[in-house]
Length: 624
Image (tube, rainbow, N blue to C red):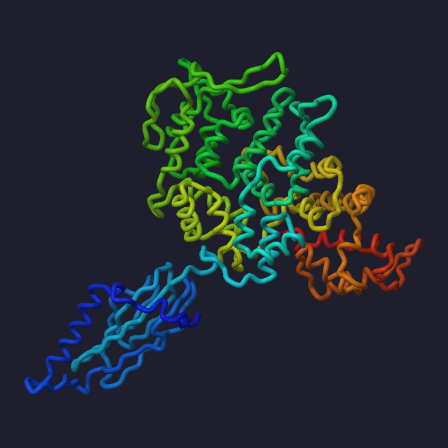
């Protein structure tokens, strides 16, 4: 780490107010020591003992350093006598030390600190001299929520991989035109009542047998959401909804017939409130009809003589809001189960639909003590708002932040940025959530613009889920398939939206990479490449539109598509793929040389599609 000198016109130069009282006292003592040797009378100036240190200075009087990065030793110089001791007031930032004999400042800073003036004094038996140095410590990139300046093309593609299911020319161009801050702010503002939602409903929920769309099948629900994932012009809306679908895992598997429509409301809650107010979001999820069925809320009867069902209370703490054993006890779970009482399932004979309502008779109206907070006795409504508030208020004694805020932002960081986020990053984003009044949008906006998001640690990559892989391929290539056909093939992959396998959600990373899973992914890609061609032709989709302009060479085609899919190809792989484009297989299996011709429709339709098939299964395309 080298010292970074400020060149911003003295913006960080010390002001009088930035002097500490001890620094002022030391400076005053230094002046008194020098003036004490002045001759009395006659107006003569002070004299300085030539054996005392004079003109003390440092190589870098003003500098900025990063945590976890060893600094280049900052060495003093002086004239006059050699100092025997050096001291510094106030203390240097944590991790930095001053050598009491040589005055050299060195070390590795461990925590961010604002720009601060430090007074270093060099002394010997003949006198002393002092100098001010200004030090600012920033978090290292993986821990920093400071906005990253000068985003590279690769940074933008990284952003698109993490937030859009993959690369899109249109979104890339919009980022370049608007700038990332404007783009991110618009992206995280989730729309409602859009044309995409209307089309999805009309295409997959409404039919002659069900003109209201309120009696969907499980397959209808899967296709309905898959369609929005593929065509939504703001794909982040579906990405963030899938994230919360994994975090607050709720499955339609417990629903059927007259209550399967609950899942429509549940998915839209995730899609519409995923960047909204966390307090409102948590309470809405707790009262959501699909959630009440999934975790037995409708079976949680608080009437006298009944035993409350602990399922939701346990998962509320353990999975949704705090994490395992993070500040709550079994007693808190029991008391929370009493608070989460009062709802029951009903049936409307006229419509043939089930619905859920609050029943004061099923609510435990007594007082409860949860996490050390008393919920007063009352029997007119539920205690869900009170449960949300006391959960948000539970403080982590080490960081001083809300335990729930830390758990939620950790979940966000682990999905979008890095697997093992440092506590410093978690705490900073928890602070953003708390100071915003529990608004999630500022957390996402801050993260997506931060140095942490674009750091080497964040770019290490995650294994794509099957949904991310298949949806991203369709969005990046426009090689769409019938959602019904895609989802029926993809069900073997175990990542069916609306049907997480357990309340823990889906596997992560390497959990998706079994040999059979890769074969199953290849089969779905093959459908999109070959079998869905009729659908693509009917939509006017031409693979030639994916190629660079003019008559590109085979290598130019490989490079262009690798960029579109954000692949990291070795030189050997690049050459092999170009060779594939430049050869043809005869009917008898013989492979002959046949240079790629970008004006030949057969070359484009067969060879480019084959190239896309291989690229879709490249190891770096299986990660985001």
